[in-house]
Length: 285
Ligand SMILES: [Fe+2]
Ligand SMILES: [Fe+2]
Image (cartoon, rainbow, N blue to C red):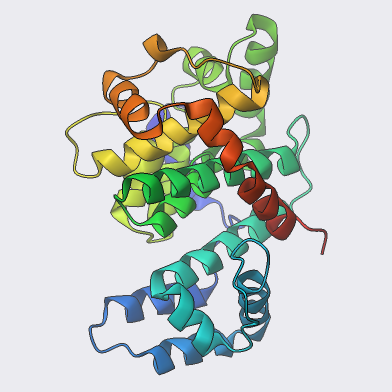
């Protein structure tokens, strides 16, 4: 199979997770200049299970509001439309993929731990340098590797060949994919997210998260996701590590040195937030 055939096969898979219809409805309303808080809150409240989860999320340590928020309207006012929509996408995606048990060598909990760490790191970079929406950065980080789950669940033979190449040659997952596949998880993930009709900037950030290209329309968003992934991978392997700057794209190198100065200290400072994201999103149901 070449890349095109793999993507066509992906399009034909019926049981592939879709986002709940509430996400599409909210997307439509968010583009409508006349959308009101009341209407958006009503849309969320129609999905009661989701509304409850959103309230739990805004009242969790992850957001850390001091007062209890007891209705969706308040949650929308406090967090903003975009943040609420992204929280719904996060909860829905983790639930849809996390429940599947057809996973062999792949630990789905570790996968989401990594993804959530990249999500919080991306959001924190965005807050620190005041570019891009922190909520979009969170969702970009959360979904950046979603193509890996697509591989493991729907292309098990391809996944198995990547996994053994990775073990035998002691490479990263991405390096192994480049050796044995005509495509890789970033292409598959971007394809899936485009099918979900999520914003184009997100599709691009996922597509280029291993292969940052300067000059494209959403380059700074992609750069944040790319860099967050490098930071998380480096420090999770070795908390005392020194990131190999020569291996980074020059734009990312400049950006990291200017914006984050001592990246090790900075990353240690967001450890607690990463911990509360893990606690909330991965708690046993
Ligand atoms: Fe990746
Ligand atoms: Fe990653």
